[in-house]
Length: 152
Image 1: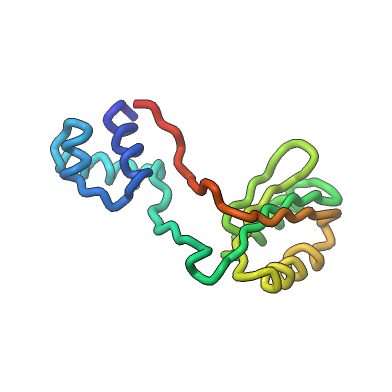
Image 2: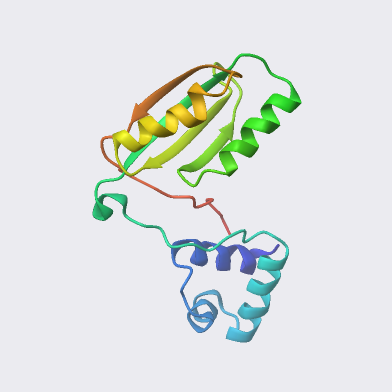
């Protein structure tokens, strides 16, 4: 990956709908060269996914909940089963397996608190491997992003 690739990625992180002509103009390459590079970045998995980021509050007041999970015991099977379960639920926006006082940190988007409570019953109360979980409800989304800071 060279300086051009990093510059292209930086632009795409800000706006994935930017044209290859505009990218080329900003990075100093032809649109065709940019197109080839983007195709290569997608094919190699560097560009993992391109999505639309929605504003939950304009869709009826979705709540964002940060959840800390402490497992009763570790072990590869327990951890892998929990990861697989989190991948199955679209409400789980992000799932981090972490070091420290907790085992997992989740970012969950729920339609409302009732839906979140129902989700906790399904995901946490029914999971015998979970010792404890702690929920923190976000009052306001000040900044939401998945950009990786790249320096060309």
